[in-house]
Image (cartoon, rainbow, N blue to C red; front, side, top):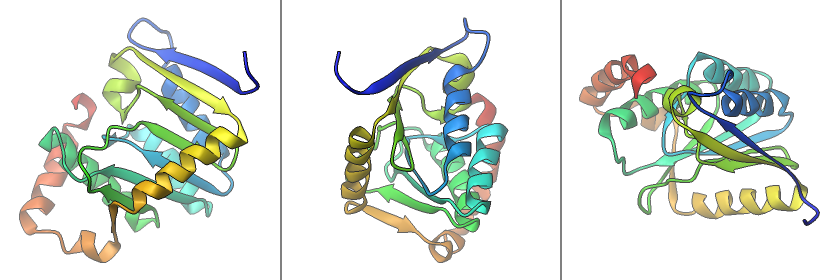
Length: 184
């Protein structure tokens, strides 16, 4: 029913392929203008990280929002490590300051978005049962983008300077936490 084109994509330990991850990477690789991501955990595997890097290098504006208040501190340190790597390539990264951000949204250009249960981490991509709606609709995509922009008002942008000036003990914790990213 309705007029919105949408696919439900599932994946998990019982599927042959990491369907949700593959669909997300395809979205990111097709971006021509902009990408918006809201995720509680930014712990991408190599394929997802490379897709985001390629988008940035290709001139696509990448906007990522992560929580400021972590629910798992080790995952948070890994998240900020990956965020820092993307900031160095020109990504706009924001920390949502009004509590724990649990949204799992990717928006690409004006017509494509996904909302679902999958985080951007190896657990979601390979080990957990996940389901995401992939929506091909201008109005839905614009509504999600508008919400992202509203959430920016309650967020802090992490600039290169802010990231470079984080405390020394966090600079040590981040790469150590990142070593555990395949199991986080």
